[in-house]
View 1 (cartoon, helix red, strand yellow):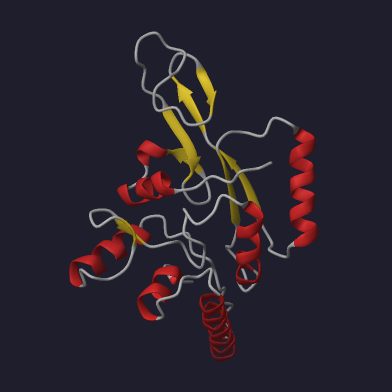
View 2 (view 1 turned 120 degrees about the vertical axis):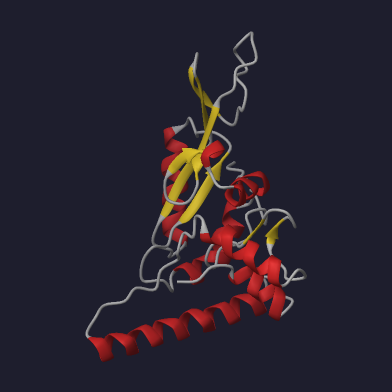
Length: 212
């Protein structure tokens, strides 16, 4: 797999992954990697997978190492807390328009042979089950990518329990009560406070999709 394709494009081509030039080069890279994997399979009789690697800790650690060696290199995040965008995904703050994001990611995500998923990050859960059904149907009718998740943010108060949305402090408690905020770090839900600092910075910058 690979990480930081968006930042690689910015550094070498001065284009991001949403641009026509960026998408074209990204497709060339992914197709080259698939061809090379087929070659390895023929040579070794082993099966290999082209995966959109989650890079939960690596996206931060490698960006930090690169910044130490090359201070002017372009990364996501900040100078103190850099990170690389996962695989060939859009920057986390690129758009809140889900269908724009799907259009830009569809062909790229279809190049992988495993481990790829499009996360639909939401500010809070969608309460209308029919709206959820219609959204999923519309996505899989109009796009080809293999997997999606619906990921609402929610919080847990020690006193009041489940709270919809992001609340680092409970809005119901009289005394200021810290809460755990849950979202999907990569493929699974975990309290944001337990993420590494790079993923926490990613969470701060993340735009949630506006589902109308």
